[in-house]
Length: 308
Image 1 (tube, one colour):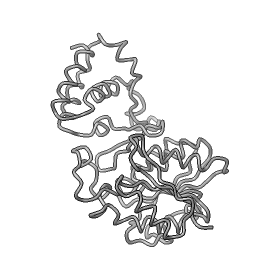
Image 2 (cartoon, helix red, strand yellow):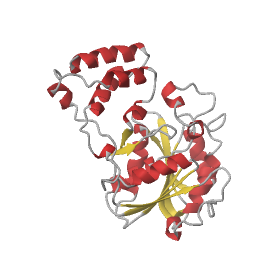
Image 3 (spheres, helix red, strand yellow):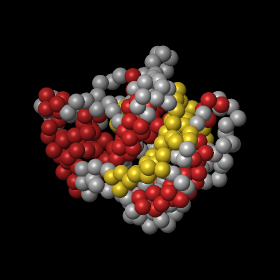
Image 4 (cartoon, helix red, strand yellow):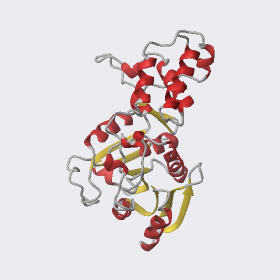
């Protein structure tokens, strides 16, 4: 079967499975599958670090429309029909122009979070070797996105409860040569932000006051209906109590403890909770509190300056 015909048939199958982005997904799966075999599957002992699989340019589908479809395409489509996240199938996800490794059991990067990363990178403009703290960092997505966009020497400390996510964050950090990254296992809900239990072997520099603190915490209310793709993410990385705000007071406490006086803070939230998060910041005396919307016009994150 030719590539163009395979994509048409895959689009029909994905649409029948209830996937709204059927046409986009069918093309993306093919673009990732056509990627040149390279360092993303580098053999052990070659001395080369693996890199994530990157989709070929969209024009390749037109140029190769009459080529035979790769034999693995049908299997990838079947997995997507079963509602396996596309990022799990291809093993990577784009974020802020950077392609990150993705694995089951770790939170999948979301494109809407790029807006928060972009805000933080612009906030840091002109600061020499700034320090970023990423709370609930998962596989390093937000902090590494900020570091990649900053495009100059930068230090990053990420805090995350999941050992699997921390391992993936370390792997992803090697994709950003300008960042000096440290990742620390910590439970924001119970640990002391000034002395998390896993810091005995961590360089003191990792706890330098942060110029900016960013966080994409679990924030979905427990009663929210979610898609099978979101359900594939770890429950603890998605949900945070009945109103989605259970962890938020602790996030603010950690941000205040680790950020420098007058430093910036940006926190993503459920689109129903922007006003509540802003009010929590105001109660703590934070300044210049600003609510931001995503590209769909929904409230998505709040930024502020810590007290001087």
